[in-house]
Image (cartoon, rainbow, N blue to C red; front, top):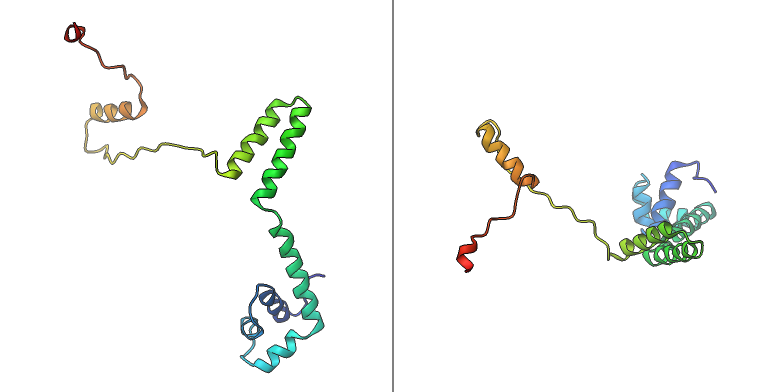
Length: 147
């Protein structure tokens, strides 16, 4: 069933399908508050059919859960292994881990509050070099100290 041709009826049905009361839905649809009219409109068969349709569509979306996605990824992984498609199996395994919250992509961000106009070129180059790790070496060890 497509959306109702009367926009107020459609909005009323949508609000009812979200769990609002008839009185709340009636006002949200643009009508003046009137408990009797809200009750009458709620009993209208066209409204009842539309609410049922909206709620059934919503229940289909709810059925897709993290658990169902993990199960689907597990099935894909099983089929990929059976077909010797190792990269696909690993991708499915990675997807399962991400859905379960066990795989976290980490990035390290360093924020330097340096105004390039206030420091020399040499100081700026030193800050950039320190942040990038370029040109860094292990600290020298004084071997005489340990003899």
